[in-house]
Image (cartoon, rainbow, N blue to C red; front, side):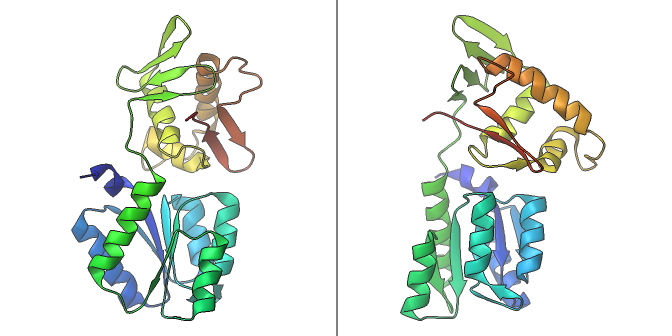
Length: 232
């Protein structure tokens, strides 16, 4: 069984509190531990920017907007997989959602097992099982050994560097916010560590980039955070 998918954080957006709680219970009973709930478009955007989910399930009809608009706003910031969940069973609505690039479309009422199976299927398609070795432009990183392999040189990683790179690698190609990285490194009170984070980023680039001053693997996204580009 692909147990790695159960560590993924899922954002559920719907204006019905009972449905939110039901979906949360379905997923938690299946083994998912990181469920984020939102009842409006504004709340969903705020949760997205603070929680950085790996996947979203969006209702089409929301009190302050619609799921299609929310999809587009999320998609600008990150290419996470998205499922539409709605009572609107019109063909044009389904085609609109899928045409935008959504990964699936589920119509209410739905069977709990169907929702679970579809979420798991999308996660498996979108995220590969974690490998201990990843390949970047100028090196490889062996997470099991906490080493950077750069040509014939073996460069050890510190504990903080290992955590930071693993956090970025788990979100390959997507923006990880500064707050999320600081929380991974320093726990539940990550504020005030931005300067320390900058120091770690600089030292990591010296280890993994051909030219640390012009990075191509560990990228800064101004005002948001960082992205790690992993080669297939």
